[in-house]
Image 1 (tube, rainbow, N blue to C red):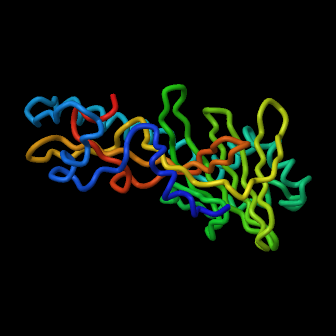
Image 2 (image 1 turned 135 degrees about the horizontal axis):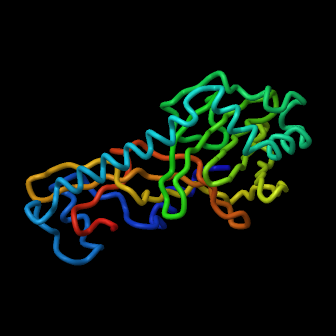
Length: 248
C-alpha cells in the first residue's frame, strides 16, 4: 500500500501536468500543449465565470445529499449493504455491520481518504464526469487489527473498500458490483495516481491570460484491479493551465 511510486506516476495524468506557477510561469510551462497562448482579451471571462459557478453549484448540490449522518447511513444501506456484509464475513468488521461504522463523526472538509489514513469518521466530496455526476462518501474505520476504508458513489452505483492490516501484512480490495462482491489481495506494486479533473473549479484573471484551476483527483491503482477513486486535492492545490491550452 505504499505511495512510494506516486511521484513517478504523476506523468500519467489524463490531461496535463501541474504548471509552474500561475500567470507568469504558466506560459512557459505549457509549451507541451502546442499552439499560442491566447490573450486575456480573447477570452469570454463572463462565460468562464458562469461555468465556474455552475460547477461549484453542481458539487454543492451533490454534497448536500450526504451532509448529515442520517443521509450517509441511508446511502450506505441502499448502496453498500452487500459490501458491508462481505466485510463482516471476512472478519474486517464486527457483526454490527453498518452500526459499527463511525457515521456520527462527519468532517465535511475531508475530501480524500487514502488506505491506512489515521482519520476515523466520514468525509463527503463529489465527482463531475462525462457519464454521471455523483457524490462520494468516504468512510474510515479503525479496528484493533485493520483500517477499513469504504468508498460509495451513490449516483454511479459504485461501492468498494480497501482494508489495510495494521501489522503490515497483505491489504485487501473488495468491490461490490451486480449483486456480488469481488475480493482480492492488493499487490505490493499498487500505487496512487493523480489525474486532473474534467471541470475547472476556479479562475484567475492575470495580466496576460486567464488561468483555470482544476482539482487533482487521486486514485488507488493496482495492476490486476484497475484504479479506484479515493478523493481529490483542494482546488488551488490541483492543476492549472492558461486559456486555449486548457482541456475543453
